[in-house]
Structures are given as structure tokens and as C-alpha cells.
Image (cartoon, rainbow, N blue to C red; front, side):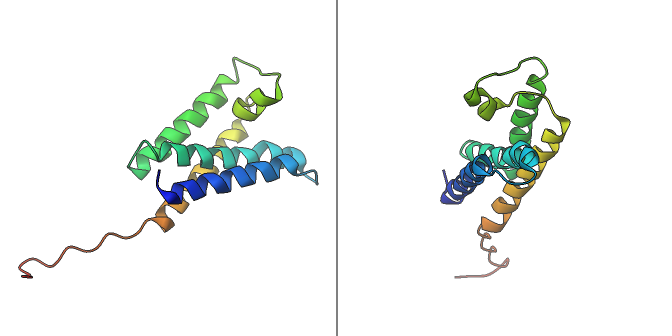
Length: 126
């Protein structure tokens, strides 16, 4: 995995830990949605190890997130580990949070990608 995606994963984990530790106002929103943003960023970083194209990474991440969220209609977890990994109840706003997380991850991907060198002009001899 490229170093830039390791840093994205580290940032996502740090956000996730901060969300778990947060006890202030709006905790339900922070825990419910900021955590989902971080989760999508983390999944994007992991998917980047498998897929080379940015669009494929984003699509795969959104597919995974949507599948888990839609799966929550059928299943419900009671354990803390289950709730942290796959959530406990369906919330359509979670899909928005996942999309925001993917947008942040794609933004990170874009700004940390080194531009490729321009090819020499046609007819140039070296």
C-alpha cells in the first residue's frame, strides 16, 4: 500500500478514536455520522491497496458502505464490537456520511498524487 493511503487510514482511525472519546454536545450526531465519515475514509484507504483507479476505489467503497447500511435493515447487532464494525440500525443519513467520507478520501487521493511528468514534445531528440 502506498504511504499516502497509510496516512489516510491513520487519519481515519484517529478520527474514529476521537469520536469514541467525545462526550460533548451533539454526541449522538458526532458518534453516528462523523464516525461513518471516518469509516468510509478507512475503507477507501484499504480498497486503494487493491484497485488502481480512483473512480473504482470510490465506487467500491460506496458499494461496501451501502451494502452494510442496507444490510442493517435485515440484521441487528447487540454487541459493542458489532455496532462498531457494521452498525446496529439503518439510517439513510449514514449513506450521506459515507458519501462525505468518500469525497474526503478522493480529495486526499487527488492532492497527494504526484503529477506525472509531461511527455516530451513530438519530434524532440535527446
